[in-house]
Length: 350
Image (cartoon, rainbow, N blue to C red; front, side, top):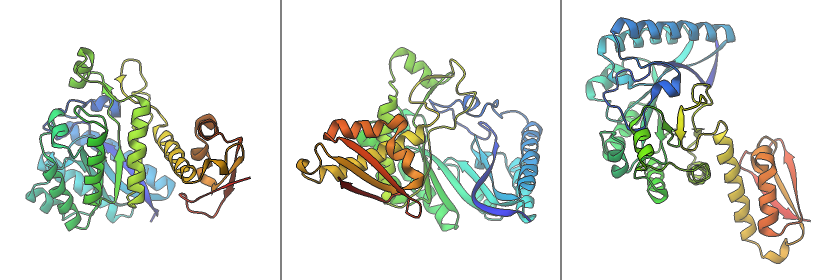
């Protein structure tokens, strides 16, 4: 029996498997480094078994169990024979104590009653919905093939079965803008997922979006715009106690190959940049609430939890330089305490 770790994920990637659509931004090979799984059932089974075997060995060797997760395609739209085979195998791993449960990502319109009934017979723990936006205009422009009310219905069905619900959004899709994105965040809060992921839209090679980008019909977010949008979302979701477990795609050699990302806000430490911007805005709010005469030309003392010091100061101390310039502060000192909540901060002047 292995030790359980709630947030450990053992991912199986089945790029584009089961997916009936090709959304304007989609290039799973660029994201996962694997070719699309659109071949024969035996080939797909073999790909799964290779990954499953390696993950099982990794879990046993580490002594840490976690959820066996399926990403990269539309898991619930796999042909039912292969879906049952994969679920049976994963369930055996759960029964053996190697894994704690089954987790998968799917489209919100890919949970029909017969599939929900099938899934209910397996140890499913977490369902992530690749929602991307809650704006019907943005969904249509991105060729998603469903509307926001379908997302809400899917969220209710996942909740009704006692599964943990995650929602993925992609700020910066065609027809998206800052107010529209904030409306999507408001809609996400209304659904009350257990967690969220934010993946700013990138222009990847061999996509419809790449063609539109080359023709000048699509303009991706700049890095700073994406940071601002996601910092706003992060602040709202954190306040609503909805954890944001990932912001930006994982750093990957495939993504960093020349010509893979043609445009958009790719950065290997995007989540860190968003959290640093969130701290900047939080301190700005504290300073704006006090009369300028209280701190102009003085030393600002910020007390925070030790583990967020780097996020507070920003990359290369850029937040400190920003506060000094904006508010006329002579110096900024950071005092850290270990046993504090990550969002705790105290602000004073010397």
